[in-house]
Image (tube, rainbow, N blue to C red; front, side):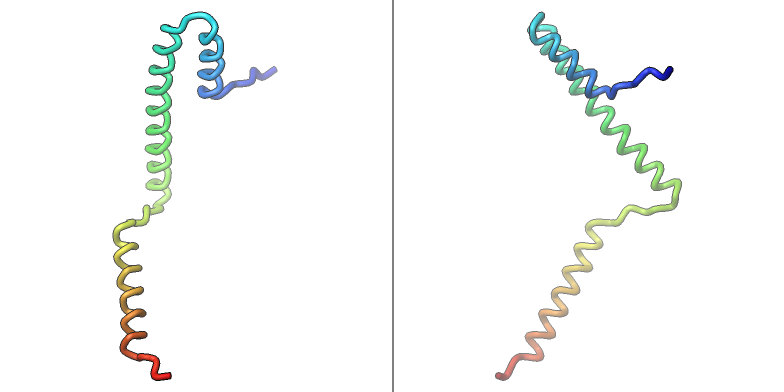
Length: 88
């Protein structure tokens, strides 16, 4: 029979709940360590996703280039309206 595996976050929350009623100092220390661990997990997950996209040949969009391109398009459309002018 398979043993159900709980997520780290769920286990951290259970431990925090139990520590609330027993040892406040230990609770604060645990919360600090759990917060650090969560940050590391999030960073690892982002790196794993990046490696996966890279291995699949999916390039991440360059946000600055897209913003510049969009700005140029909006500027050109605005200029066309100004140049064309509405004579009515």
